[in-house]
Image (cartoon, rainbow, N blue to C red; front, side, top):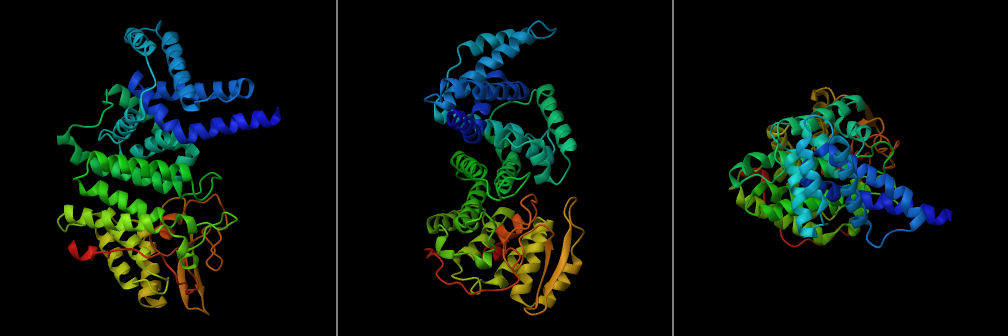
Length: 436
């Protein structure tokens, strides 16, 4: 009985992780209210936790949760219908009564509608990311606060204001018309990238690699690329995610601890994903007519790492130049730190140390300690709870800092070790930075 109980609860958790965003997106389309839909999905989840251990896991868990959430939404609307100004909710009850679970392609459209709603220009950039992390990834306010380097209370207030603004301003739940798409794309691409980044950020005790969050971000990037195949930015975002994801098989050791780039087994990298990422990067550059954006530059950096057969064979001079270009159009603290590592590898530790001294203060919530290895002459600035420079093992699974640096540059290497046998990648990466 205990085993059945545990299995049922595990299935509920897995279904919500994998299908929660799709269930929520479809229900928002039906009820037209983000908060109502979230409440209904939460009540449906609680109902599943009560019912499935007793009745058994249903043959179609997603359908069970979706239809139960619909019934919970009807119950909520009926309870609120007696309140002043709720007449329109009565009409929604009638509409919901004939609701059926839509096919997968319609659900994907619903998810796109949801992400464009989260990225409406009426919302601030930080609010867009927070709302997307909540609705699309199901992160708690505490987890979102860890990703955004803010407090849980501030995140909760931000989410509440966002839902209220969407309702009060009647922000439409739709993919924008073609004339609006160009203006909305940077926000949407930024949120998708943030979703993927969140999958690599160990927050609130979560593992350093969240398969579901990364898979969802990749799926959204594919959907956006399919929707707008002629736009260079979605192509670049997809290329960046693929080139980053290609390293995932080697990013964690058997204990689940982070392995820095210099210690990774490149033979485990996904050569197919690398090849497709490079192809998409080239396509994106052609479409942008030589004007590289931040995603193209980050993808080019990831591609330089991917095409190197070993850590010592990496073209650090090119990576340093790409970081210089990236910082000129999209300055960030993590890119600045990664540039320090690239400069130390391309030139010498003294150059990196000089750059390190010029960096502005780190963001709120991160503290850095200066570490130097006299024996190796390596100098790097390292988050206190980041991977240990000599072992590659993360000291604490609760800190989210350092993931971007490991992903886009070299992690925090203290010793360079030769490792051959990187995957063969067809084609070459163009000189991206020289085009901007």
